[in-house]
Amino acid sequence: MLAVSINKPETNKGFRAKLGATFPFLSDQKRVVARQYGALSIFRLAKRVTYVLDKQGTIRHVDRGSAAADPSSAINAAGAL
Image (cartoon, rainbow, N blue to C red; front, side, top):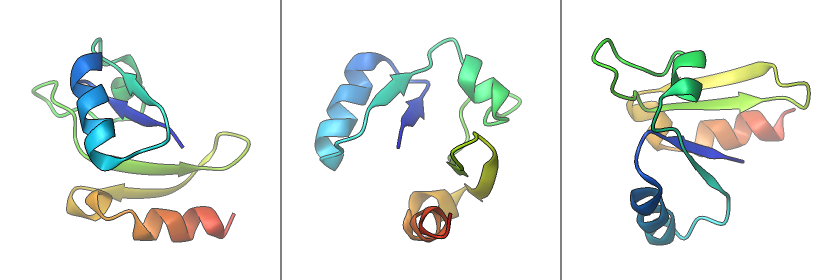
């Protein structure tokens, strides 16, 4: 699992601690990864999106918007791989 955010590393560090997350956070301030995955709005702001990829790197499941805030469907999708 990997979180990608366009926020600064310091902001991500605080958010990661608040969540108690044990997985790494990537600070994508140049928006390279967000752009590659189609997660930028027309205003270059990041959309909330959760992707589940298989071992080959193929996207198998996508949650967007408010659905991405609830990890349950992504966890179920990952478990089915």
